[in-house]
Amino acid sequence: MALIVQKYGGTSLADTERVKAVAERVVSTSKQGNQVIVVVSAMAGETDKLIKLSHEITDRPDEREMDLLLSSGERVTSALTAMAIQKQGKDAISLTGRQVGIITDSAHTKAMIERIDTSRLKKELDEGRIPVVAGFQGIDEFSNVTTLGRGGSDTSAVAIAAALNADLCEIYTDVEGVYTTDPHMIKEARKLDKISYDEMLEMASLGARVLHGRSVEVAKKFNVPLVIRSSFSSSPGTIVVKEDEEMEKIVVSGVTYDKNQSRITILSVPDRPGIAATLFNAIANADIVVDMIVQNVGSDAKSTDISFTAPVADCGKAFEITKKISDELGAKGVNIKEDIAKVSILGVGMRSHFGIAARMFSSLAEKGINIMMISTSEIKVSCIIDIKQTEEAVKILHGVFNLAG
Ligand code: ASP
Ligand code: MG
Image (cartoon, rainbow, N blue to C red; front, side, top):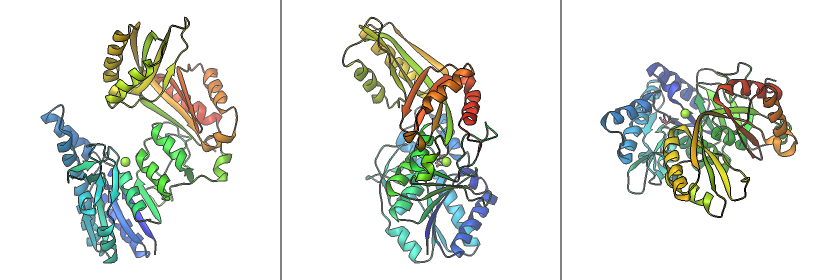
């Protein structure tokens, strides 16, 4: 008998008809002789609605109250899904994060799971019930409700699968799996049958909104076999596993883009030890995640320019901090550019193939696309370009690296 964790996203539970359809799939998986644990997201749009409500009260809602508010969306779907499963003749029980025993740190609205008490889930399974867990939530050591960050119910599911050593964790969504690039943008995008944890991690951080990044980290760490598939079809989806030789032969397996980027440049700062540390400590203390950093060699050896990218939502805050530091250091000034995008290619095969970055740069150059910043890792190359050329760039790269198959 296999233990399968099935996670259903918001569009899969958008209304009661969809909830019934989910229950059918759960019941059929159970009737095939498997033990099933269900993890649910809130109904599509529900979390946004709750955030909006809070902003009707205050611009800066207290984060502890925010977590209690947001956790309610998943409670609704867990109870409804449990009822729907019962109605179809199987025993089910809804459980909140607290009832399961999902213990997190106290970082409200972006908590990290510290441990999961598996006894309640095991007891329910042993007694023949299907647990339906409210995703996205836990409690801290003081019993405050916490949430795991937007999209966090993926992480709830994977963490539960890891804790119980499940045979499989299926993530049900409204797309057929992971694609070579955004199928809404590029019609030649192809669904991948298989992808490695590392590629999936890069995809999540490069802006492909497929899975909560943290869920992939947990899956990789505990070697949880993950499948991403659609709850609207019976297509087998994409499996995320440890990389194998076959994957290494494919040089580039995906092209991603992220339009949620801004670039801040501090001009002519003194070129001496400690400058970058001062700037980026201040930025980090404001909880701003910096992505790319470029520091030039100053032409006069006394000063240099430093550019970095940050999410658009944080760029106002980042600008203010940088401006203050610029004034203190006597730099020439700070400028900000918001109409940029990051386009990336990724693939584990890059580890063993040469010239991939050069090929990317020349393909972009041939089409007159200017590259403003570059960053690379073992398995990806990212370029910052003008946001207006995003689609063109993605299309070219998807073609050049033969992703359409
Ligand atoms: N409902 C939460 C969100 O919208 C968590 C999730 O769906 O995974 O971010
Ligand atoms: Mg999601």
